[in-house]
Length: 203
Image 1 (cartoon, one colour):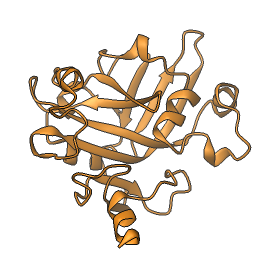
Image 2 (image 1 turned 60 degrees about the vertical axis):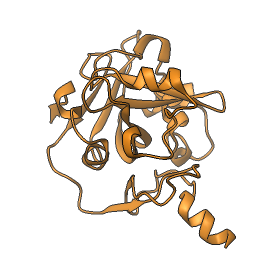
Image 3 (image 1 turned 135 degrees about the horizontal axis):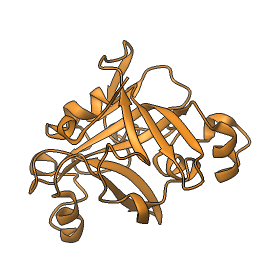
Image 4 (image 1 turned 90 degrees about the vertical axis):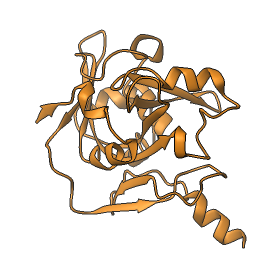
């Protein structure tokens, strides 16, 4: 497997989000504990063409933060919880990929210490859940390179066979954009319902 470098993220985040499925997120904490997980769910945000982008005109500070050079770790805060993302495109363009869910691989016992759960499949099946389970500290990781030793991504260079495309989660504007990608059939995908399906249910 190859460690991804910032160059990988100098592209359309929709393409990057799809290609990150199956990659392995690796976190080594300050005590040397190594925890890894396979990415099974991602979302793309591309502000120049995205009406739902949380870095839009009402969030100038967040827009500026996302406009950094590609391939850096960033965090959104949703309902007080940190969500892990990676900056995309060239510097000055607000774009990113949100890592929404992982299949735990190595260090599961350590993850359970960070985030005790009854059902193991609830350990990392959401964007805030995986941050807590892996013990990732936003204040330490934010704005560092995606290929740093503490937190990085390993990629096999091929896309898994069973990729499902849906609308994203928890948005109103841009709810029809097919910018969420999941490994079909994975029990580790988040249990949330895509925004477009919610709207259809209301109708």
